Length: 219
Ligand SMILES: Nc1ncnc2c1ncn2[C@@H]1O[C@H](COP(=O)(O)OP(=O)(O)OP(=O)(O)O)[C@@H](O)[C@H]1O
Ligand SMILES: O=C(O)c1ccc[n+]([C@@H]2O[C@H](COP(=O)([O-])O)[C@@H](O)[C@H]2O)c1
Picture 1 (tube, rainbow, N blue to C red):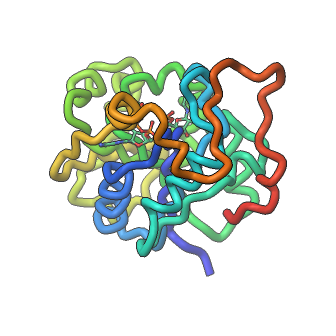
Picture 2: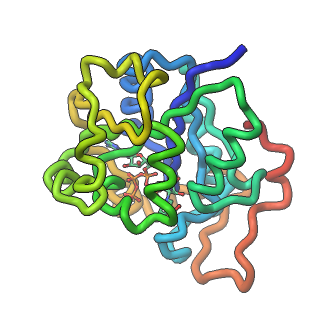
């Protein structure tokens, strides 16, 4: 049966309670069946330096997602995609009965215009933007938002997102959570060591590739 699924892409370097809270809020506000976390093999706009190994980031996401309708996945590693537009193309074709909505924090909306084919993404799936302390003004003034402004839907109609004509954006506001992975890394740069087999990537590998075991990881 087709499900209503929220997709939260992220580096999860590491995953934290902000990810969990925004996902639980989106589940309620959008009437979702599940949220899938797409742990990125490598955000095209972020440096490899300082990025913990994929298995440690995925393991941290699985730990934070426990006992909730949230699935921390290696979908992008399995599909061999890094750009969101490519991931969505493949996911929509792989799961024709499911309905997908893209979730992002306000910081991501502020730089959304730098993503490959961002207008195409907005025409492919609705987008729910979750308020984030310190970023909301920048997100509202962003180039992407000036294009998307006419596509904004009232938050009171958020549960009707499957019926919206695209592009469509809804801004979700709930008690803001100031947690960030940057702060967690600053307090504990070796956070990934708590996950067996985790190694810090201190310099870029010659050919970036997903881990060989990624094929066996659950969606
Ligand atoms: N506290 C938060 N409130 C709202 N959105 C958040 C929050 N934390 C993360 N997000 C959103 O979750 C997604 C994945 O975030 P990511 O894994 O990059 O975490 P982060 O804390 O933003 O990391 P970093 O500090 O390394 O940039 C992004 O869309 C981001 O905007
Ligand atoms: O497709 C792109 O061009 C693109 C550029 C930057 C970020 N993204 C995606 O944005 C999501 C959030 O990334 P991050 O690192 O801010 O957590 C994650 O799914 C990335 O793959 C995608």
